Length: 326
Image: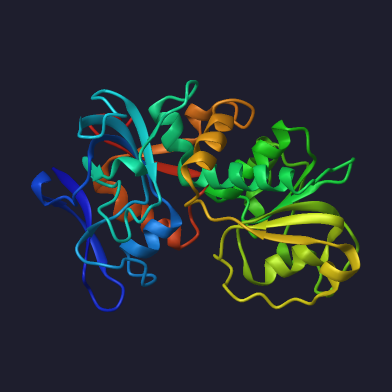
């Protein structure tokens, strides 16, 4: 079988496409024949030595996989069942999804909900799930626009793009934040009513209230700017750190406006996964989902990862296995 395998190389490791035996896969109750697997920013960092993400070598990369059950010792899953697995350490400390086969414990596996095909589920992947989880959390915190827009940073990335269109489908006005001036038409097509650059947001610790809350997929100074512009009793969900891991802000948004900052970790419990994935098959399913992702062969993974780290990608890229590249 073929796999994108990350091997020890300096402090952070380095990945390449290899031929390996299925017998060398990590142990587990369920063996999945991979149909599609997303390429995420975290995968690119791990595969090209951008950060010390992988915890053991060698390890197949890829933090998600969608496929069909090939063999199972777990009675909950029968051969031929369409399933998805993401998080739980795959691609980090357990062989991941960028491979023709994945073997994992049954407790990590989730059957695809009705209304989602394998390619659609892979197109959503961890990015779509994270965006949906964030919206679900913000709704639980009582975010209500009442005509005030929401804001989404890192809007041209996987999480950000999904968040823009999901919010728009729910009826929110969406302000998209992007440092790419050429992205305005793309983001407007997704449903954004306005596109701004980080440099246009100001640097005051508490600026004018411009949005009722939103999703930050960038981190660093951009998150601080979002908090400073959030309205009374608003909420902001933090997901990414592409713009930095440090947050330099003040207590003013929290004590003067009652703003809530909540963190989103897609490696959530199975009951939450089932509920949110069910929403991804219904009210949070982006229109025209089948056209959202570029499908590439496994051999193209290093090139896609390099472009991703250089900020040259827009939207999602997924690997198609067994001829699933169209």
